[in-house]
Image (cartoon, rainbow, N blue to C red):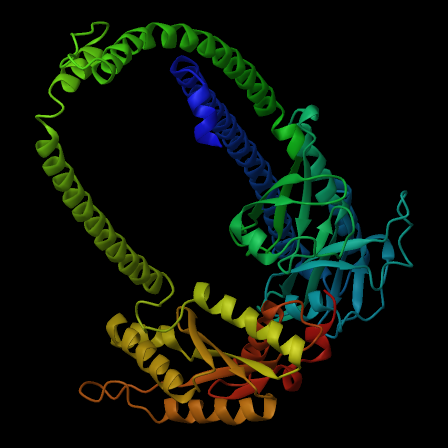
Length: 575
């Protein structure tokens, strides 16, 4: 059918249609490509701007928290206050209230003795009450400490309610207080109202243009909302937050998002907060959309002009071809016609005319040339196939390098987490137990300091080898960084994991890592956790195993602890 239709359409129209279609396709592809490029550049610019907003907010949070820690530490170190900590509490209360007036964000400042009884506090609140079970007291008696955002436990009924009815939430700052002889006599603690963070948020957003419609959300290290709508929710995945840039899909519309983590400042170590800056996609890409419409209009106008020009050019170009066609037709119709006359119009038409004249003479040559072209094409195809095979091998080698730890040959974090998440999905679907082991080499810094980094690397390599030789083919082991390893045990509960972990621990403890040199030995501590259905993802199980590892370190190292056996009420209490 197509051939019959082509036979009825003149060459002039075919050239016009073909060239016009190609022109429209080129204009369309160029227009779409330009529009996509403009949209991509606009997206990159918007995401970079959002990243600056998020980083600015994160820096402000770090700066303010560092200043609060420095203020409380400076007050605790004032020599003139040493006689008043345990004796003249009335004067001490006045000093604390003066500090509170200088910075109203302090909702409460108080001093508690070593037994946890509050001796002096702003407004007299909680004086005489025991705070010995509060995390800020237990951490602050040891060293300067900062506790993450938490709801008011003891002060909620003592403080006047917020004007907006929202419950009180605090960030605690605490420092140990020493007397003149250097003995710790108590803890100076301050509750910083979390409403301070909302003030910082408004200040950061006020420096931006309102028409940008930007917003800021603050998350804790687990991804739960601390500041923003729906507190306590986990609206973003760990992969999105790790990528730094992502798009949020919701019923209100899509929004661009950029995430920046707080890093601490000076003596303030940071609490792992994550700041997410948001902007509606339509707002971010409004300029790009206008540019796309303009490019489309220009492209359509160019296409129309091109079609007109092509129609005129086709008429001019096909005229000599029509003359040559008539001359060739006469050769077939007239017995005495042997040769066509030269037809002029363009170099191409002239050459075509000459080719027709010598067609019979060149049939053999044309066939030989066709065979040569076919051979060259076949060689080119084989060469291209070889290059594709080599490229595939190179890509596979690069993937192996990207997913393998160079020192131990084990999986790295990037390769381990997808496998662990697959195991978590399998556990939730088929209820087959899995356990996570967090393994850390004890006193590893001492190994590097005493024997050198080469010896330290050898210890890491041999510990990795011991673990990898002990696991089954279905289990996975990875080096998470430094001297830390993580093991995923399938079809294994805590009892079986404990037997496996203790066998590894004993093997490492009995190993001489440099038999040719100094008698270098080392031990490991292991924390275990079994996956639970309440775990949102494998990161929650890893976090619990890490808590168990911390307990193993605290219990003297060279031991195995499980999360269920080590988690205490003080560790699980809200900050």
